[in-house]
Amino acid sequence: MRSRRNALIKKLNVIFTNFFTIGHRIDPIVSASEERMPKWAGFLGCIVASVFFGSNLLPIKQFSVGDGFFFQFIYCVGVWLVGLILDLILHNQRFYPLVLIGGLLWTTGNLFTVFCIKTCGLAVGLLIWGTTGLIMGWAGGRFGLFDITAQIPNTNTKLALNYASVLLAAMSAIFFLFIKSTTTTAATVPKEASYIAAVDDQSSIHLGKIGENTDNNIPGVDADFPFLNRLSDRVQKILGYALAALAGIFYGVMFIPDQYIRDHRKDYLHLGELPPLSGLYYINSQYSGILLSSLFYFVIYAILKRNKPIMNPSVVLPALLSGAMWGVANIGFIVAISALTSAVAYPIVNVLPGIVTSLWSLFLFREIQGRNNYIFLGIGMFVRILAAVLSGLSA
Image (cartoon, rainbow, N blue to C red; front, side, top):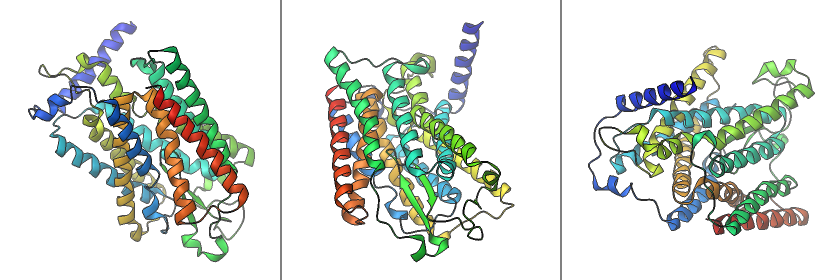
């Protein structure tokens, strides 16, 4: 019975894939996509991903983003535009509906993090979803979850290095929890601008208010999500922990759909043509999932707000730029996964963007000051660099 059901699911996937196929890829670029990317391209992808993941929220740092829903929608438009441009460059004429799920997972996880910050706080939430995202992304490739091919290092030494890199990457976030940033306080900033944007190791969007809530200045009252006011502090924290873990899981499995197609290419044969091995040809399908799901959530949000969503027009261009930068970073990430496997790429791309973000805070914004902060920052950076090096050696 199960085999019949699986066969039916695969058949439906092929039907939908064929339906969305516009034509043939006849450009010579396509033949190159049948070759596996060299390892140096994977390491270059890690660098690109780390720099852009760690920098993509800089354009909106000085802007008020409200409760984040409008910002996220415009941000996702920027992401989708990058995917469209990439498809035009590659002359890619196939669309993969299954990969839409990856975009949906990312957007949903991103939405959850907003509630996490409201309930359990940014620091704890960041630690939970960052760690679960790392473990799920690594384990998905290492153990072959969801019927993808297991990515096992070819020697015991490389296997040990890979396990050590994941352990160090997960531990490194703890040191950053003790760093206290010197930012402008709520007393010196107008309330309509009293928001901060923080970034995790994959640079998804996380928004939180500075200081007290704005509902008549009553502490503990949330004006953006009134239903939280009916929950006790304990229930709010439990809800926040659960949503943070779920967000991390979604971040960790967002590349599973395209990896599944690449590992089961014969099931997605179209007119005698196999799907490409390069992950670049699946980017626009994933980004379309991000845009469509973001649009859906924004419409629901506008309905719940009775057609009065919180929108700041001045954030449009910075949000588009931020989204485009995230789109470029994610392209680097998929190149790293294609060339190095996700078991190697996830630990590297999980830790290095945090270093880039810390360097911006240290030298550009001077938000990290004081001897103790420097010590924790130095230890955290050292552990993260060590984790990235060990993961790279395991490739």
